[in-house]
Length: 270
Image (tube, rainbow, N blue to C red):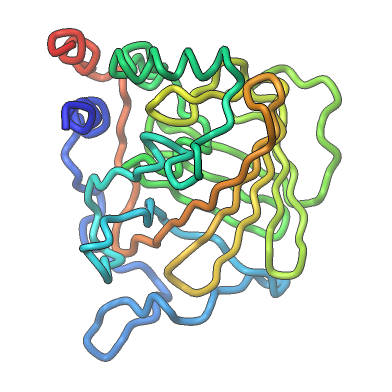
């Protein structure tokens, strides 16, 4: 419970209200009662491929809350934001040095978390945070806008070759290609020490990340993530991340360093 309370201090510093409150999202399929038809057909780009555009949040919700509405924007925290390998038997396959470091970070309530001091979140971590993500998708480019610190990520979907010696970057370098209706994205070049969950699991410059994006219907996206980072893990590993759409909302202007108080609070309760 203390960990969740600390999450609330760090992640929910601003009220969850949008600049355009209840402004209707265009083109939303709705049922007779006006609610969003989450199982409606997948939207398509002009070239016929699935369109991942929209505002999204984690769908890793409490199973006791079935049928979460598309316009319900709350601060539900994904279990995978805390521990990305929570559903894997035995957890993530850490190298011994990282296993010891994660144990230490978990014990000290993630006091050294880069998120707490307002650095950008890597895209793997952002999927589980309670900050909304906006996907902007065109036939040649797939952009993620993160309301946390006005962050962004670019995925070029022209199957371009990845750089051979990239300067490490917060989001790395991403190139995508299609396999039927699945968008496959390969990423390299993330910075060493990049945290991917609250427990302090990390990836670094050797990491190769593959995401397989599927939009099975209007209201949901599934992302199968495979990480191959021999410096940090004893074997490649995979998890599936689920997102649900948000409609009639927009991104919130949330800048961490603006009146940031979370680190002071965490040190006070540590």
